Amino acid sequence: MYEPKPSPKEEEPYSANGHDVGGITVTDPGNPERGAVEYDELHVPCPPHTTERHLKTKIDLHLLPFVSVLYLLAFLDRVNIANARSFHLIEDLGLTGVQYNTALTIFFVPYVVFEIPSNIFLKRFSPRIWLSICCLGFGLLTTVQGLVQNYGGLLTTRFFLGVFECGMFPGCFYLLGMWYRRHEAQKRFSLFFSSTSLAGAFGGLLASGIGKMDGMRGYHG
Image (tube, rainbow, N blue to C red; front, side, top):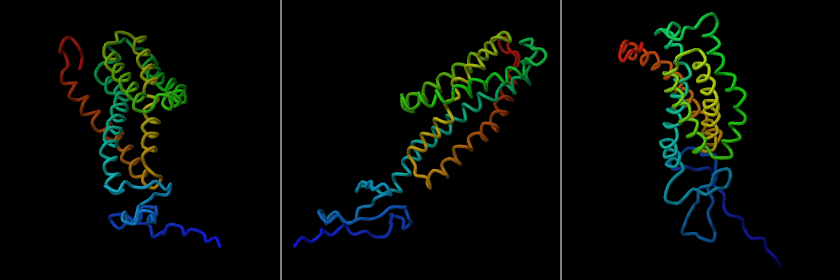
């Protein structure tokens, strides 16, 4: 008479530090010396030489600092025009009327229009390639923005700055979502968003330091 093969023994969710990890521990009947094997909710086994907590710590150290600094720099580039206005931007470029406000607004036109295409390229080329391209692009444009001589040059650099920065936020968010489960990601998203506050804090300090260089090589601070 046929007898059904007993299923692997399921135990309570377990982790090395005694906290619930949202998975199960299964004893492999074919390899009893291996002991209990830790699985997550997708039934992916944790490697025997480490623990889930150590894996998450390693991912945090390799991922969170870089995406936070990346978005901090992108946000800093976006808002530095307000500091430039405090150091004679309008007088140097001869802006009149609403031209300064237009230069502010033109950034968000490509930011909105190209965000979905940017996400498609992100999926096509992978985050490591596409985010690197975006980072190099907005860094180069920020440098060129300091060399503009007229209103048209300012509009052009602000426009393409929006083109390259539109992929930064969804790209970093997508990258974090790939590495963490839903209940793990909330804390990481909060740390990631805090980089915008740091950009606001250090942006003014950096602008003050640059302002003290007023007159060097014929440039206003």
